[in-house]
Amino acid sequence: MLKKKNQENGAAFEAKPEKLPEIRNFVENFCHSCAVPSNEISKILLAIEEACSNVIRHAYLLGPGEITLKISRKRDKISFSIKDKGKSFELGKSKKIDLKKYIQSERKGGLGLQLMRKI
Image (cartoon, one colour):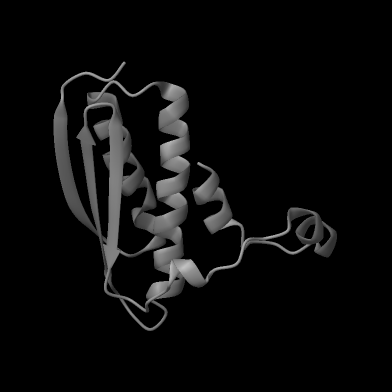
């Protein structure tokens, strides 16, 4: 059960792979402060890390940048906002992946959005 009714926190991070552990710690600490169950924290961390990795890899191809992460808790729901000023991407234009075809192709990567949707 989540404690406290409303909480909010935010932070900005350099968009670099070596900052992912710092982002992860920030999110994990917030979740612990809200008494989120461990199994749910693992799912949240996976989704946030995947989203931030995508920003680092794809939005800032040409130079340095920043990721702004906001986390809020209202009653029993936790929401996240990840913002950047890198190359834009329209989530609505991404296609769902046929997992059977994907596995047969032996392709690596490219499942991040599907993973985040599932979580």
